[in-house]
Length: 193
Image (cartoon, rainbow, N blue to C red; front, side, top):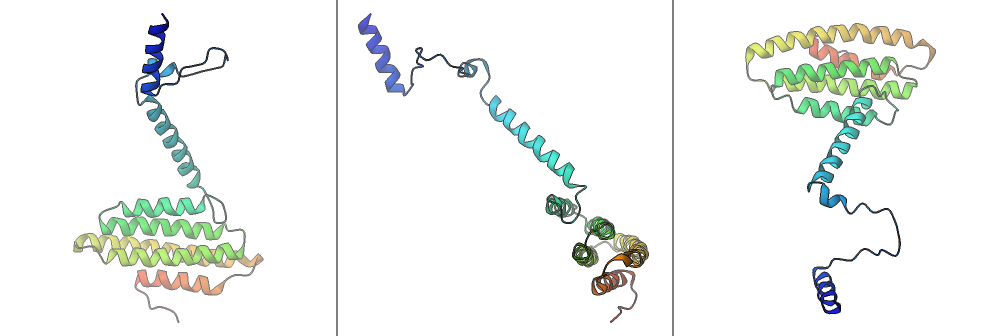
């Protein structure tokens, strides 16, 4: 028996397997490797990571400037826009996201957040206009330009209302003018200097 034990122990050491000590009773889940298929742990880990990521993405959709998930919200929107292959449709999506910035500026708590959000709004409106220039199909361009122009007029009205409502704090007039000028570029009106 000693000879068989020595052979078994030599084989265990050769394979690099460490025997479980029976002298210390403890909770050990090593037996699970015999009853679970390989890769199940990786699959469960992947599902957990996806669930946490999806939860963060859902929470980020309602984030406002100054909140911790706001940058994640912007990144998700930019990623969404990049995946729209048709430039005409991408311009519409970008204009829709610009509208969200306008709403965020309206509900901003501080004038600094409002100013930064209006600057982002102006940038996104200009980006939508430039994206439309990439489109090749004249019919799509015409339809998208009409829709962007309609949205721009709507945003101009909202911008004016927001500027008038913000009487309780200092308004960054330059940010409002920049936003209005960006909208005028889309509607085809003369830019105010």
